Length: 90
Image (cartoon, rainbow, N blue to C red; front, side, top):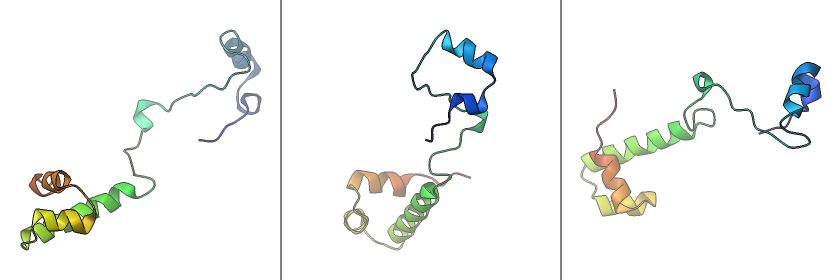
């Protein structure tokens, strides 16, 4: 998160109004709900995990055991179970 000086982007009237509530503090102004992105969308983290999970499911279907997959992917047995027994979302 980067910081932006209020005087550089907000009109003076709005700054005066905000100063009635906060002076000299840092405030966070969230994005509107409509512009939120799901976790990992920007960084590619979500895609990476989805690809890993797909590879785990394929290995399981090819006969690899759950404990073997847990060791190979450094995940718990319970996490592997969640991955292999979850249906793919359409």
